[in-house]
Image (cartoon, rainbow, N blue to C red):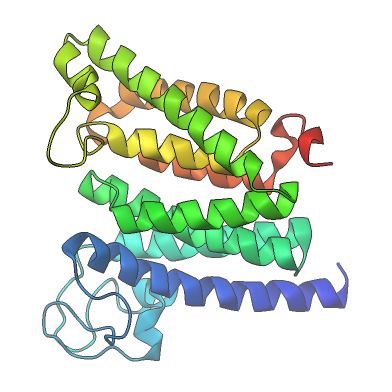
Length: 265
């Protein structure tokens, strides 16, 4: 490995730890409607301000055993914080090894941070807040426009995937005998008609369509469906399709060789 590559990996790891620290804060605060920008990180038990070492769960998890250095209380999410920081750093390194530093690197690392926050919030809170979906949608639109040199691919991909998501949701509720829920979005109502059960995943699939070509989307849906089915057999109670889709999307975008990527060439 060349010296420049080693230096690049070191810089990438530092960036990964930094953004990983931000992501752990966001995964705790966003679902609780807390301000996630501007307020200094604190221990949620004794309210003491954290120092620089405490920001990085990859280190503090081992050094402090998941506890606050001030009050000694154990953080309930210390393991998920560690996994979040490690996952972001790992994917950052993959992006650097695949593309080096450049426009694609910064677009993809932005995607990784957003998708990791989305996956963790979905896994821990059984929902995907709108602000995370909107942020991911914006990144996807910029990424796809950069790749296609036009916005139409993002628009058509998102609409197509959203329609497919509605169809899958309808079939699912039809099969389990809840037809009324499957048709609920066709009825007029005062509130948003797309906030019912399962719509988080319809919106998530639409965002995946913004990122992916039609060829990739077909493989993505098949892979996500298979993994969801297997996961349901292994541990149905922890099944969160949003987390599965987020991880798969990151892999498909970083390594587009899973399907023919000639659409972008």
